[in-house]
Image (cartoon, rainbow, N blue to C red):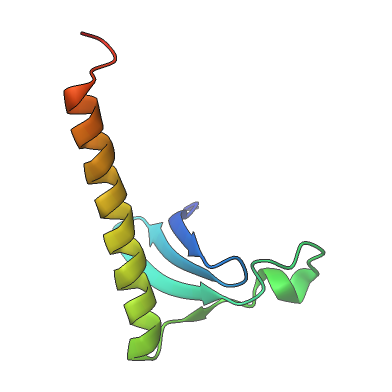
Length: 83
């Protein structure tokens, strides 16, 4: 049995998820992500990315993540914790 690993980007309402299972990955959109009182159908309401606009959200989110990581790396290089 594989347990998926994932990265989730969210705008607070909808989740955009990169799911990795073994050597494969899927891009999924989960419209019920913010619903805190989930029923069974909410847990399985995700669907695959179909439109280029949906894919653009992943691209923009991943670029923002990489920008943040680079910023943290630069800060760490200038202010090492263990030095």
